[in-house]
Image 1 (cartoon, rainbow, N blue to C red):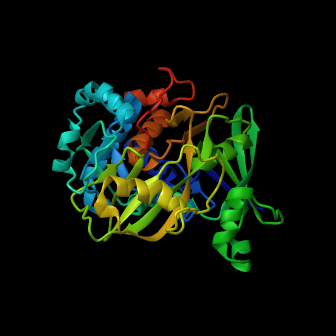
Image 2: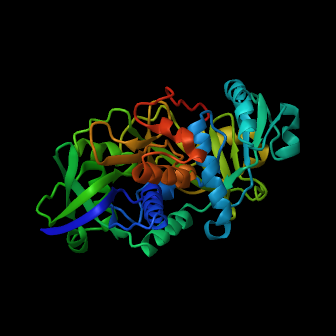
Image 3: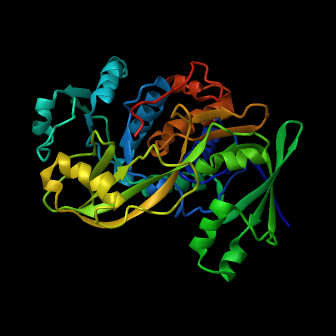
Amino acid sequence: MVDYSFDFLFIGGGILGSACSMALAKGLEERGMSANIAVIDLDLEGEHSSTLKNAGGVRATWRNRANIELCNFSIDFYESIRDEIQFRELGYYWMHGDESWDEINKNYALYEEYGLPVELHSTGKISEFLPFVDNVGGVAGLSISRKAGLLDHYSLREYYRREARVRGVGFFDRIFVNEILLKDKKVDEVRAYDLKKLLDESVEPSELIRHCLVKGVTDTNQETITFKCGVLINTAGAWAPVISNLYNFDDEQIKPRRRQMVLMSCPEVDLSNYGMIIDTSNIYFHKEGKNILAGYSNMDEPYGFNFDFSFHGMDEESMFVKYIWQPLWRRSSKLEKVKLLRGWAGVYAETRDRSGHIGKVNGLRNVYECVAHTGRGLMISYGAAMALSDLILDSKIREELRHAKDMARERPSGALFEELHL
């Protein structure tokens, strides 16, 4: 058995684990303090994580102040490193049905209060802004969020990791946490399997990692690693409840759900001047290289760890045809001739009110979490990391992010339900 000891231990090295470890290391540095920090993950490269399977969109137009502040603060930071992360502030173009049009109009005064440049346009103006759209049936109006756009998720994650490593943060890969020991309402020790040797000697590594993520480790005759820690931070994404159950926190609020995306070609439509475009059908799409990336959030999708991509083919029964191509073709005749190139499925963590959790875990003295931001982990990552670092180091959050306290498990301001959650 190999033993390690850290002052701060993060379980989960996706976009949030990487961002939070960087923010904590920088926070300590700024205060003239030092500590041993580590991040452990089963799939550090992120082949099966949500980080590299999202659409890369960022916006600050939400219903609740906590989400607005966290995203707005993050976007300000992304602007400062735009070249490193390929941030393109090309806006969000949202064609609303009646219900979401009412919602965005209700929220408009809040956007003005935060200085967010949001435009609301009538249906008749859509052709002026989206000339490829030639059918506005079912569209109640168009909103354009200017402080929004697209960035490269891989580059942002690697930026966080590089800045963390420079400050001494260690990253451990192929680590499967199987036991967490408590003492006096504190996490004392994390025990995990080191799967590196098994991966070296076994079948295709990707399939084994996927098996472990879905079903756990079935071969328990593996080398065990012990991590002593002063503070434990759960940043395990969709697997956060699996980790919290190990420290006896029965988490019924977070559920994993599959989301699917496709890459398709359509030479007749040029989306170079646009960021994210969202249809009334809840399909979101944008330019990706020479092609178009499109995604659909099926809220009827059953909960569970499902990585299977099911939007195959172009026949009439194809889910790609039903959920993506047909709605887009009805919206724009120029999208008639598309070619499905490839696609993928990712697992996201959702909560009942579609907002995440930031703060200390109830009933435990040294456990924090930053999890379940319902698909907006990328856009919220920098603000969420700074808020969590503030809480850990100062027991309070900076003024610019003051409403992030609402992200606590016991919502001090009530539910943070997000209607426009895509």
